[in-house]
Image (cartoon, one colour):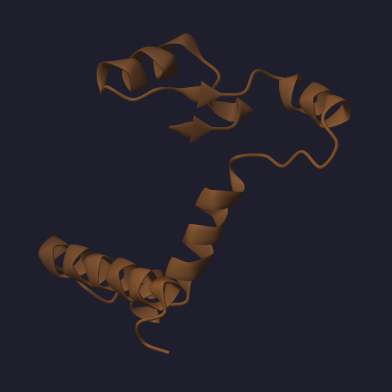
Length: 92
């Protein structure tokens, strides 16, 4: 699980470990040091930010018209499937 320095707390690290994930949490100032050392360095967070941007293109998810949780989750799954199919080139 990739998190930024806003989540750099022992409680968060314990919770992520309890859920069975590997924590990739940057300490404060660590990312700036890596940026200076490695030319062309990009943060890992861009994957999450890009995915949120793609999901925000579905107005029904962005505005949250659905009142039932099951309907919202179904639309979220549909949007993720649609994004995956488009990335795979199945719809043109």
